[in-house]
Every structure is written in C-alpha cells, then in structure tokens.
Picture 1 (cartoon, rainbow, N blue to C red):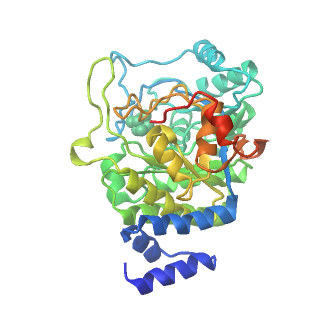
Picture 2 (cartoon, helix red, strand yellow):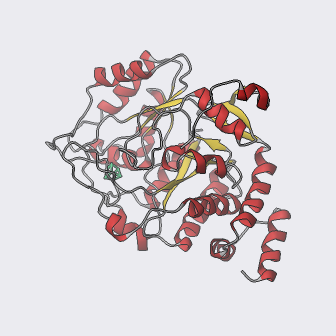
Length: 389
Ligand code: SF4
C-alpha cells in the first residue's frame, strides 16, 4: 500500500473517524498484517480494554431436515435420508437436560427449515425448555427461520416474535446473513431470506428490546469488497437501531464428510479453498475497524482452531464463543484437530496465556463474573499444561 494512504488511514483510526467503503477495500488490499493488527488492537482496546468475554453455552439443533439446499451447507438433510432427524419436544428437553450443568447459561438453537413441522412446535419447545432449565437463556432461530415461520403460520414476524419471546426467547441468533451482496448470495443461498427480510426481522427484534448478534460467512467465493459491503449494511442498520451486540465473522468450512452415508453435500468446495489463518486475522481486523458502532467482535474458535483464536485477540476480537459440546451446521468433523468441546478452565487459560483478562458474560453481554489477572508462570508450570491445536 502507498505510504501516504497508509498514514491517512492510520490518522483516521487514531482520530476515531469513521472509515469509508474505499478505506475498507484498501485495508483488505494491504499485506501488512502486523500493521492491520496494531490498528484493530488500538480500536479494540479503546472499546474493551484487556477484557475477553466468553459465555458457557451449548448448541442444540432440533432438526437437520431442511427445505432449502444452500450450496455451502453440509448440515441439511432431506426427509427420509439416512441420518435425517427431528426431535420430539420431550427428546429436545431430555437432550438439553443432559447438557445442563450448573455453569451453563445459554442454549444456542438453530435448525433446518422443516417442511412439515407445524409453527406451534417452536414456541412449545421453547416453553418446555424454559420450564426445564429456568436459569438458562434461550438464544434461538435465525432470521431465516423466523421468515420460514411467517410462511408456515400465516402470521407476521411481529406476532411470531411476541409469541416466541413470551415462550422464553431471549435473543435471535445471527445466522442466515452469509454475504448480503446478491452477486455472491445467489450462488450460495437457497432459502428466501435476503437482506430486506433479514434486516426487517432484526430491526423488529431490536424494536422489542432484543439484543442480537450479526454474522458474515466469508472465505468462499466472495471478494473483499463483498465483505466490506456486508459490514457497511450492518453498520447502517446499527446506526438506526443500536441493537447488534456483536459481529461474528464465520469462516466458511469444507465438508469433512463424517455423515452416515459418506456424501459430500457442500457444492462449492470444488470451486474454492478455505480462508487461511492470515486471511481470517485480516478479516477480524478490518471488520473491527469498519464496524465502529458494534461493541464486540467474536471469534468462534470451533471454526478457526485455538491458535488462531488466541491470535485473533490481537486483531480486534474481544469475545470467544464458550464451551460447545455439539456444533453441526458447518463443523461435522474437522481434519485440523480442533476439539469440539472446551470447558471454562480451558477458556480461562487460553485467554490468560494470550495476555488478556477473562470476563464471563450472559447472552446480553452483561458481566456475570470478572476474573483476576493470570496466575504466575511458576503456578502455571506446576499444573499439567494444555496442548492447544
Ligand atoms: S444453511 Fe440453513 S437454510 Fe440453508 S440448507 Fe443449511 S440448514 Fe437449510
């Protein structure tokens, strides 16, 4: 990058000025990863100091049967396929109870767009989960699912959200965003929820007092300009509602084929590679710099591995997704040895070892517990040492 432009961008960041679309594209074009990290770390430190937030959650997928066939998705199954499943309500509650331990604060629930399950199933399952786990917050359903509920119920999103909130819904999830630009979206998304509906549903949720996450699926067939466009749309909506609490860049994953029938469902993997760790760190950094009005940027470590998760804390990230027992949408198995489960102590040490201070949060990003500074090296050496992937 031209030295003059570099100085100009640096000055804007240090003065707290909003970056433009052209600035975002220029940042992606830079090869100077440590410089990008320094800028993003400056902004991250201004907003969040040396804190790294996490929560203790579990994922629950009620059904993998889906009417859509998104090109990147290795999770969906068609009715009657060998490993297609749909949980009865009592099964979902039993499974959630099995995952419960005294430290669990959140259940994260996303599902396929089931062709025949009735709308009534969804508020009922939330109600029963809430009754069985009263202290656990329910973060459930993507905007895509809410739009699907409109279709199968004939109700509007307004009534749907009211009913789901009455049944115990604390927050929507951030999925279904993928990449909003139609030039790319038309090749990877098969459901009917695009920017207009996705933003309408999150706007509505925010107007009801909900705080929601926002996401972006990157590292497939999109270019940096599509990532910039995606973030700027969300930034504009955030100017209007202030309801996004976090931005989560999700790294596109190949299908690692551990399904019972051995089929590869992902239809774009022959056309693309996965983003490299350096590209992921760049995406975290540029996102932190562009999305100046969202308080937190999260690294979902299951998709990145623990080494990149630790490094990301120096590239704008201040939030790590918590303990995950099951996560299936893009991570059926992984050839890189990333574990699928982490516990509170593992996370604390991961954060301390990277030089940050862990803070446990709830679904709304309110502080549940602040932890002390890291134990001394002498204390650490006296303990069995973790080997990170
Ligand atoms: S991403 Fe969601 S909507 Fe698309 S095929 Fe997969 S489960 Fe269905």
